Image (cartoon, rainbow, N blue to C red; front, side, top):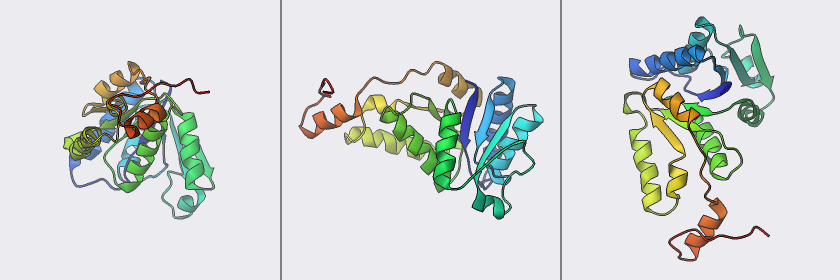
Length: 206
């Protein structure tokens, strides 16, 4: 892993443990010589992890839409500042540049971006690991809901297992290094379930 994309909030959140998790992740990434790719904010959890990586001698690449630069929320002192036209361009560039994706505690934006890349992994559009830093149990209810999606047969268990979760950044990065993507065909599985089969059907793709 050379670069990891980290999705995180522009707020520090309610608990000091969230900021601490961001600092620990930034320190661990720098220690392992892993560059940070992120959305470019200088405030909240975003600013904390970027500042930490820089202080530890690491490399940070900020990808931010021009409209947000105009609102003066960008970390403009960064050497690697990539200004793009739209949010869609930002997400595409961050995905292309990164070898994996991590979400720290945050709100709607980080969750939307993270689940988009997780969905792309489910569809076989990439084979990069995706994980959550579960600081202070922040994602507990979310992971329970995802278990519910499996129980209700909307998500295949092997696709649910793609989501790596740990409260410790070093442990999560170890899981990233040993990650192997599932071989389940999403389309074939969905078709099999729609026909009432308990297991995915196979097809040649022709």
